[in-house]
Length: 295
Image (cartoon, rainbow, N blue to C red; front, side, top):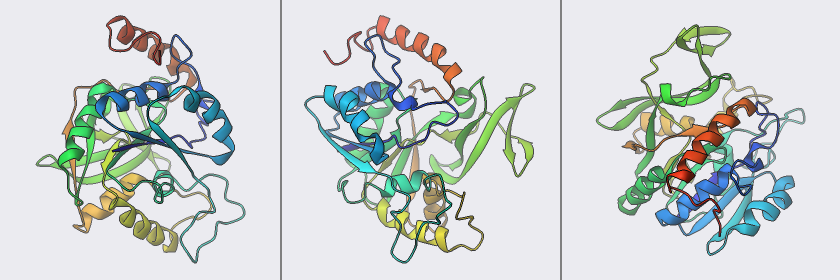
């Protein structure tokens, strides 16, 4: 099975290419720990989705030190669109996480997980997703479930896929771009207004378990997104939660929320990094990870 890593983000809030910013004692990146967890969970191929101009940096760092597992690269390109569509000349940012997922459609042909390069998900999350995929069929996708309150940053707003669940499955999921605590109350911003939200809501951390059937749903949904007259083709993005919500609403597939006790940690902002490094050191001291990860 394959692990696909979303690493084409601009890192604008962080202020740099955080995917290859060292956090470990031997200069390891967050991606290193995710790859390490994937390998010991049983995945046998890694696909990095990156911008093509970052290929050399990835090959010289991550790619050069990971051994005994197949590595491939897919490129998220703004001009890679379905037949009949073209990218507006004034568009600056890529088309979103679903478009990034689409970038590996010709590389991934088996069951796979996909997740962010700049999030730490914990060993157990990869193990439960691997075990789930061993038994899954084409109409059953999944995600590890996290609680919103445990995924907020004290240094600014975050984006999350907020879920409504029923009998362990996602009934509805909505991508909210700005969520943060405001005067002790958790709120989200939409169209310039802030609304209160239950911080015990289950959320997606953009970690998904799919079969290759998902690419069909991505393609169809992306075409609808591009054709929609309400879509702003200069700024709007198409997200994986959009694919999930649309497919569930149409009854095309189900998406299970798989429980995990793993600790999620993120480095959304540069000021999040010291807390993450302290957390990582505690995991190394407890023996969860070796101090020299690849040796």
